Length: 433
Image (cartoon, rainbow, N blue to C red; front, side):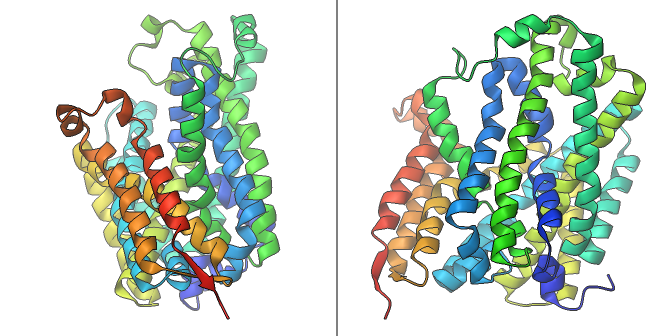
């Protein structure tokens, strides 16, 4: 708190973080509930190709490093909408800000629901009081120190994540044993459950978020210079491949050593916690909590900073702190109340971002400083791509009723990305003088 002197200090950690800090906080941010609990469940369901989710994340970060990291850092923005405003115009800043803030309330609430599930599993009872205490703790340290708090706690949290997952994997294969030969014989990148079309779709949809997502780019903005931003994205991308392999191997062990009857309704990773020695289980529980907290605090401070700077138009630390408290409390209430329909509704708003924003924003970044952007055409690209994502998220039943093949619905985001890319290319105007 004493180090926060201005808005940049609070919202972008002073824009002076070194490689080690950026790498640790970037990895801690991308490793959350979906990339731990979610990945092991996916692998248990479809096999080793479940690794592609995080593998495409690593590819996205590596591509970001080579293609746009330096350029984005040189734009010297504080938030992603702020960057859009600088390279396209104020209207772009407002649109992106509304999409991100609305959807991130759902993302934060979803992370808190996952955290509540782990607390319930660990304590053996559903304690709303304990959950509220942990939630308030996260809101409090984020509110007090902003990104500086997030960067510092992410270092500790990421170390706990790695230790927990690594010890668990080593124990399963080196001490627990089981049918490891089936695991090794079924390490394959494609199978009947995961076909080339899935590979193609996830490359753009999942890889695109890691390449140019709001959470990811916020780590670029806190870097001390463009070299740090570029190298941090590269090292983080490579490191993500290693983590992806370890977490996937845990899921593979469950797939070939635990029957569906034994697993029951348990999540794969939660089942593992119950069969490993207590000290290993405790470490893994703390690792999972750390994974969730390190993603939650990033979303919380970013959403609040975007609301104040890009929607209200103020560079006020006090207003951001108030917003952190408000968004944090709203998300906690959603999570405690079990309103998964509301959480899903808000989170699905984010489905507009990937098909509608990724390619238009990339085109604008690459053209920045060289060519003008035709704002009307650019907004058309965002709207058309976003409509495809919106239809897939909110109107699948309606689309089926009017004759759209159900098999096509899962590809609407990919189609939207293609449409937005083609239209965005026409937004590139004449060379700047």
